[in-house]
Structures are given as C-alpha cells and as structure tokens.
Length: 297
Image 1 (cartoon, rainbow, N blue to C red):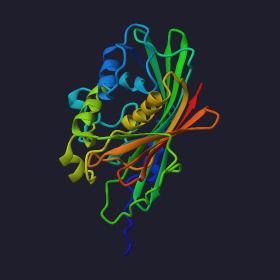
Image 2: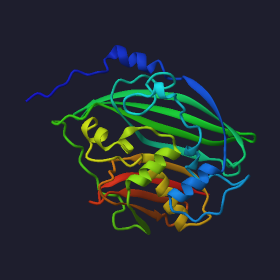
Image 3: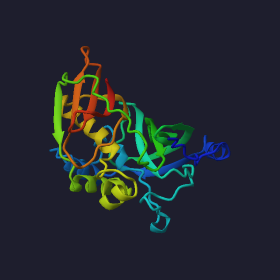
Image 4: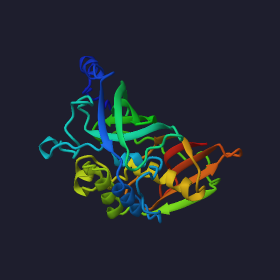
C-alpha cells in the first residue's frame, strides 16, 4: 500500500524558510540568584545559597534569556506563535534535538552580571523520510558579559510532521557503553518535576504538562521529559561524581523521547586520561534516549 503524503514544505516554502538564515537578534538579561536557588532545589541538590559573584553552573544559563511572549501571542502548542526570529515552520511538532556548547572557563557567567545573548540562525534544512517530514534549524548563541565572550552554544531545533498511525517507529538503540557506567542515577520524572522545570524556564509547551494534549493531539503516550532537563541531569551526574570539575565543552544529542510513565536513568564513564566523560540517558527498557560528551579542563 502506498502511504505517500503530500509534503507540507515544497521547494518554494523551503526557500522562504531558508531566507531566515543569517538573521540575528540580541537579547539582554541580568544573572540573578533566585533561579539558581530554584533549580538547585528542583534537582534535589544541597548547594550553598548563590550570591553576587557565584558562577552559573554548566547548562544553568538556560534559566535566563527566556521567551516572554504575551499571552495573546501563544500558539496552540503553548509555544509563542511561529514567525519573528525563528522561521514560521508549518510542521506541528517541535523538539529540542541537541546542541554543542563551549565555555571560556576563565570568564564564567556570574550572579550580578549584565549579559547579552547574540543569536544567529545558522542553517535551515529539510528532510523527508518514512516517518514524515523533518525541518532542522540551527541557532548559534553567543553570551557576552563585560569581560567578553563567556559561552558559545549551537542549539538544534527539529520540527516534525504530525504523528501517523502507519509511520514506522525508528528502531531503538542500546547505549554504546552499556554495562560500563562508572556512575548511574535513577530518576522519577513525575508531574511536579516537569512542572517545576517548565516554570523555571517559562516553557509553556503543552507536551510537558498537558496529558490530554500530548496524547490526543501530538500522539505521544505520555508527558515528555524536557530534553534540556535530561541534559542538565547528565551534567549534574558529572558534577556529583567529580566535584570541582570544570566543563570546557558539552555536546549532546536527543535520540528517543522520554516519557513520564516510568523512571529513567542517567549514566557516565570518564575516559582513561580524565579529559572527557561519556554521558548517556536510557529509559526503563534500557534504550538510549540521550547521548553526550563532556570535555573537562
């Protein structure tokens, strides 16, 4: 049987979406202590209270530069309506697919600093496969304080077609270092954890808290655990296992959605020379859900 579907993104529309390549914007923010205290509590950490001069831990910069769309500008999925800085991609499902981050450890972001984020759309690419259409947007963010560049981040966003009953599921993958974890931690992604992280990042995306929406509209079996939260938990595992380690770089890729229906686990194994750490997350069945590499100072 032929299940071909007319593509939503034809060459003319793709050319229009690709006209966003090179667009940029600059956003200011001030690093404050309250979000750091709140995320520390959410991750069940016993950190000293942050104060002026406290360095922002790796990936915790995601607590700042949050989207502040007015309520009338929110789309049906809970995200700001499409268009503006990001291209108006018509595909309904939007996910954070991964990223690459590089820190200047001599110039960390610190509480009390005024910081600017300069964002540029680096690429807009389209693919069509057996499971439907995909459109990938890569955004580069450069974070600067008074001392200069502190962090460079490439953020991968993927837009997907609506779920189809006849679409083949991608085959699951086993972790590449299965059974070789030096560190492991099991987590329960309950509604409260997902709500707190959504609130901290001012993320209105309904896939993380609206069970009826995520199951009936987007076709997933349960609430989806935020990709950035899983990435943060991977780095948190590293920080718990190697206190005082300085992260120079972090590359991560989401492989498979994690749902709130079961516990999941995070794992890590340092290299023999101690320069890198392989990190990964897996679901309750042992399938790989996120893969990452941290480079240490």
